[in-house]
Structures are given as structure tokens and as C-alpha cells.
Image (cartoon, rainbow, N blue to C red; front, side, top):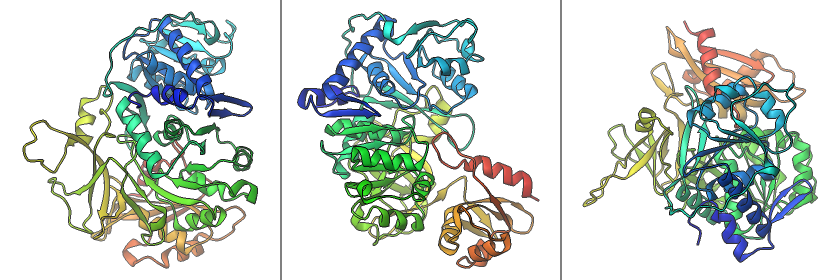
Length: 527
């Protein structure tokens, strides 16, 4: 039985010690080898004086030591904080200070990049480098103590009582406004998430799961926890070129692949030989709605794989999925609740919506996180009592209110409408940006990516701005592409402004930075 995050490895090491747990390039770790390394580093953390609930930040590429560090932190009764490896010094500084990180695991080159901010992290006591100590000329003297991972002095782990609701991790989510917020996850959140996801994906020890997404992203971390929960193999890979993904999947005979829509679109631009696709058992999408055109291409490419369309939010890890046998029947649906979760659609007063009535998605159950780190106000905005009263229940159960507008059909299948703060009010109508974007994908084969947003307009209330990225080697005028995009849209959904760009801004998790684009468009076009 698995109760705590680090037991995802130790439990499997007891049951299936020789199963291959982690693969990275030419490196491979069995479960028993991985468990031994986790225990050794946990003792190293104890030697540094790590106390219960102290935060350990991991600022590294997707390496085995990054995974080992996260599990070791919890085994030493600490809390791990995965920091996206593409972040720059100011963003890293915000995270280290926001959750008072005590120990930072990183590399000498990354420490050099942090030289301007490292002494402004008041709670940081130890910087542990995985490779070498930098020369004095490469970095100024820092307040925190520098150590080499290979030279940590170990200390026997203190046996402390713990419960499954203890804090295990803090994941920073980009959000739509302001600086990133730290979502606090318990051991129970992480273990229940692994159990739930592996159950509907039918994962077992024969699976080989590719961890392609950042492990600072809940869906990226889920690839690792899901694999470890069932004793499967997890292949670590930092994404660089789509062709490298093909080679990795072919080499390791990957059976499970999860990505976000922009990444899927890039992966579909390269050639996929049968030797790389034949063994793929399933593919999954998360991090945004999948354009139907892209989905069709993926299904054609991976014709033996079952498609799983998923929806989740960091505050609850994962919320819904659409089973493969419903993909053609329920086009555009985000499915129903994952196992061990309840999803409600509610009005502003908390009452449940009628079928096909838009409302806010509310998630209850053991995957609901512990709130935002040290932020009472923002936690109160998102974490509220379950809207449906249970007669006789005295204690208040908290649910996460997603901020996403959805609707539920007569059969209980959910459909995404839009973010509450992204809905466009034009000509008296409420318009979902996704509906405009999907029409572009359907009406204009030249479009690779489409983003719609609203700007203030004296005549319309809000006017629609459409930003497009065209497929490679496509030449078409703005007028002609706009005509194609308008073809399937009613007049009130027609864009007033259109821009064609070479690329779109993205946040560290690879999602399009809608907030940044919206702000830019409002400054440029509002009247």
C-alpha cells in the first residue's frame, strides 16, 4: 500500500525490484537502484540539517538526479519545489523567496546564471551542485553554503510520524495575472492522482511512458508518478526537436505519450515511421483543447493508439477525461470526472446548473490541493466550501473553483466554454475565444495556431482580435485568410482585427501566454 509520495518508489522496489524504473539516454535505473539512491540523498539532506517541511528547490533539466532529489526531499520529511529549467533569474528568485527555500539543487552553469539574485534569497542556506564547484571568477561569493552532491555528509534519517495530508510539494502555476502562485500538494494528492490516472489509462508494469513535459508542470510530474505507481518504465526527455522525440519513442518502444496542443502540432510536422508508432498504446492531450484537425492527424499517425483527451488544473492535478470510445461520439467534449473525483457545474450562487447551461467547474475530492502557499486572499478566491450541502455533515469540505466556464450535456459530458476572465462580450453576445479559434482551424488549412481575444470597442462593447501563425511555407494574404476564417462564423463572431505572426509567446509550461497577448492587443486596438 502506498501512502506517501516517496513510497511510490520504495513500494515498487519491494514488489518488483528489477523492473526498469527510469531511463535517460544511456542511463537506466531499476526500482531497487532508484530507491537506494533516493535513500542516500535523503540522508544527505538530513546531514544538511533539513527539518520537517523545509523546502528543497530543484532547478535542473529533466535529469535522473532531478527526480531523485524530489523523492529524497520527501523521504527526509521536506517539501520539494520543482523549478522549471527554462526560467530566468528573476522568476527563480521569486519562487525561492516566495516559499522560503532552504536548499537548492542545481548545476554550476545554472548557479552562474543566478549569480545576480542568489544573495537576495534570504532563507537559502545550502546550494548543492550536481557537477562541480565554480571558479571564484565565475561567480561572486554567495551567502549560502556551496556543496557538491557527491560529497554530502550523510546522517541517519530521523523517524518522524507523518500523515498523508502533510505537505509534499509546491508547484508554481503561471496563472493569468500576477506572479506565479505556489500550489501546495499533499502526499495524498500526489498518490491519489497517480492511482486515478493510471486506472483510466490502464497502465501496468509493461508500459514505457515518455516524460516529455516539464516536471514542474502537474501533467509532466504525473508521467513519473503514474509510471512508478504501477511499476512501469519512465523515459526522461527534454524536448528540443520533434525528430528527436520520434527517435526516442522508437528506441525505447514507448507505449504512452502525453503532450499539450502546441507540442502536438510540432510533432505532427515530422515523419513517423511504423517502427515508432506500432507499439504506442495510447496518447493523451492536456493543457488546452485539442483542435479537431490536429487530433485527426494524430489519430491517423498513431492508428493503433487509443486517444485520451484530458482536462486538469494544478489546484486539483487532474479533473476529467474523455474515454477513447467516446471521442467520435462526443466531439469537443472534455469528458467526465476522473476516478475518485466529483465535478460540478454551478451558478454564481452555488446552485447546480441545468443541462447545457454554462457555469463554473467545481472539483471536489482527494485531489483538491491544500491551497496557495502563504496566500490567504488568493486561496480564498479559489478554494471554497463544496456548493452542494450534505445533510448532517458538520465539518466544511473544501472544493476548488476552477474559474473555467463549462457546460454539461444531458448525458453528463462536459464541454469547455472558456475562462471566466477570457470571455468576449461583443454586440450583446458572450463569445468563447475557443469557438473562434476552432472555426479558424476548420475553415483555413493554412492555420497552425490561432488565438482570439477581446479589446474594448465603442461600437461593439468588445471587438475580436485574431492572431494567427501559419503553417510553414504558406503564403496567403491577411484578407484571404480572414475570409476563410469568417466562413463558418456568425457575423457577431467576425474578427475586427487580424495579425499574422511567426510565433506566439509562451509561458514556461509551453502554453500560449494568453494574458500577455490580450494585454498587448488591448493596448494596441482598444478605442
